[in-house]
Length: 524
Image (cartoon, rainbow, N blue to C red; front, side):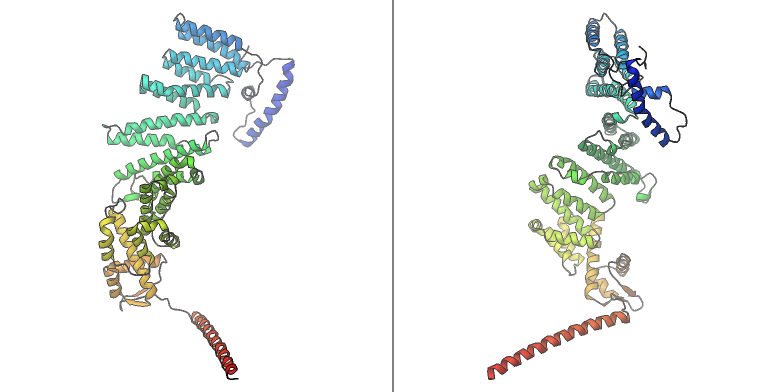
């Protein structure tokens, strides 16, 4: 029987109907793709029809006999592996042409099992490639042999070593490349290969160049997978893949940042900023509502840990506080008193470190009203200082909170301690702007515990960010916190004040009339 032979007579009607079903799809594809100028050949029809043909013959009996025969002969070593494979593949060709899916699958898997049991891994790799490229091969058969080979990977690595394992991995990646119906197995094999390269970067004697190269390879392998578009992969597995992509991207970014010149920072050539951006984009692919399910708490904690690292790199303290708040709201964290306390402490730290705006102020006041914060006396008082509209003198804050805060992982970093000083100064400027219309620059410098230059820089930064309105008269040394009002604004205020005054007069007049009427009734 030929590779693409179709029975005549009774099968002719089926052939015509099948062509009617397939041709519209082929023509639609052709019209949608301008580069296909040539008409489709007979091979295109046969490939498309291979998936929709009905089974013409059942080879179950022949397959049973051949499998028993080849298995017994190979075990007795009376027949070589190549001869057994030749007989299996000859029958496989017949079952494939007859569209006998169960028989074809059994023969293909049996061929691989013979290679695996004979420990001939070179023949195993070539047989996998051969079966996957057979003319008109069914997708289910290719899926079956790929999944079967994947199940052998751990055993091969343990018994035969990494070299044979890598050969089979590369074979599977080659077979699954470009096939949508094999996207999930390809992703799993690629993940195993990525982890292998990552372990090379952690070798004790690895050189710096080798560490960077292997870690970059591990990250690139996973980053090439667009798992969020895979329809055959479960939601949890997708999330795990995305989190692994983010983790490796952050690891590569930290390594590149450590090698980049310190003076140039993020703008340095070869820094890890592209990886940080990719990690941030990857975080947007994760559905946070899916993480709220109880079964996914482990993924939730891992996700927010990665997002915290990414936000800290950008010094986005408010985002860090929000992520810690999500961690604190996790049931497993709330049940553990030590973890719950640690999460709440970090919320406090990063809320006060965040620049002042409406969102930060709202979160700060909600945190101050949280009953759980009252159990943390020092942190409660720190938040209260920022909520209260009173000056916070930096020397007092440093002596009161410094000994404890400088021992924490957050404020042991000099940059974040300096940022806390900046937030205290900005709070004091807002308080002064609220209570003072005009103030001398020297007096403001004393209240802020800064030098004159630092005071002017702070004022300029807050004015540019529209946090306050201020103008500095340098010759006179006066800071004005009230903008000049137009005549219209003055008249509006005067009109409003007059309405209030007339309202009070009317209320007083009504009260006096009521009192006089009461006295007249008493006298009468």
